[in-house]
Amino acid sequence: MYEEKFLNRWSKIRKYGIVMYMLLIGLCGGTGGFVFTGGTQFFTTGYIGTGIWGATIGGFIGGTIGAYIDWKKKERKYEDLINQSKL
Image (cartoon, rainbow, N blue to C red; front, side):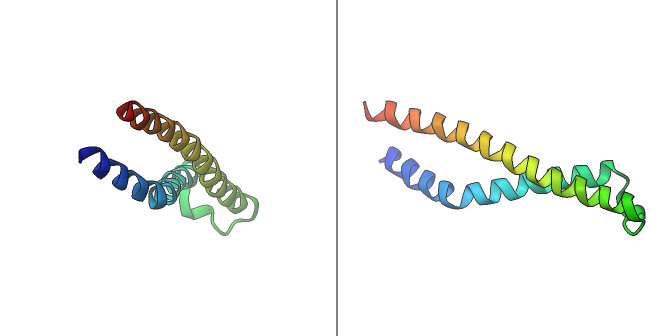
């Protein structure tokens, strides 16, 4: 009974969770990159502005990739748990 609940919940989390997870981590990375390079005052000033966009986009991409790898590890761990509970 409990296992079935867990499996159902896990498949739902799996469907929507990875997108939310990636967006959240990417957003954190992007914000971090943005704050780190000096915030909004440089937005309009040529190369520095580009640097901020680069940091934000880079943070987003890096964060997304990191989140995806992290998610895969978690997924594997849960699948192992599920397989063990079936034995």
